[in-house]
Length: 218
Image (cartoon, rainbow, N blue to C red; front, side, top):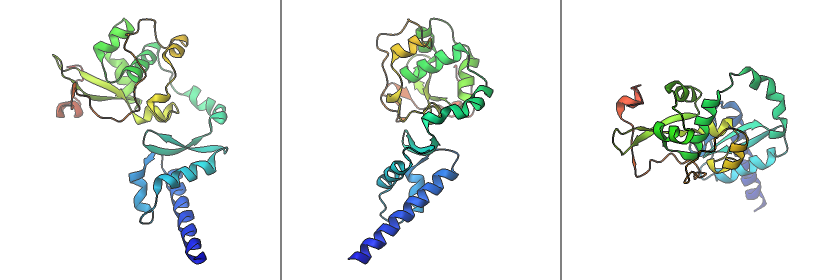
């Protein structure tokens, strides 16, 4: 019986080391489906990840969850070490910050809905910039006249801003206090449910032309 326990412990430790190696080597967060082929049959990958996460708690890097994916990231209290790198990146304009905030809190959102909240027109280049950064994506088309494109945030958005899920976003009042949102907010604007990527009943999938690069404003 003791030998069986030792074998089980060795398999568990090997699986944890495999997960650790895979996650360290990956530039992007990985989900359980991507990791499971490298583990032994019957491995409880969810439990293994939580064990690995606990082992890195308090270290200079932490294992964090971003939506349904996992990644190693610098501990939050050591983020100042990356300040120089952040200062070298191109800052977002106020229009881009407002647009990103509105999409995050009101997704799926069309351009018209974004403009209604902001109270001003939103230039095509603003959304293009957010899409190039990988933080916003075209999601679908609203089932209304003109079938406008709907926009949503991405898993890269969660990862960049250190969020496990959209439910971890700061409150609307906090965003308004920081100047990221104006006072003209729709009454039904609420923090969304955690990101799942599924289309709503009032959305259709994107057209093939949308995916191949057709103007998303049609």
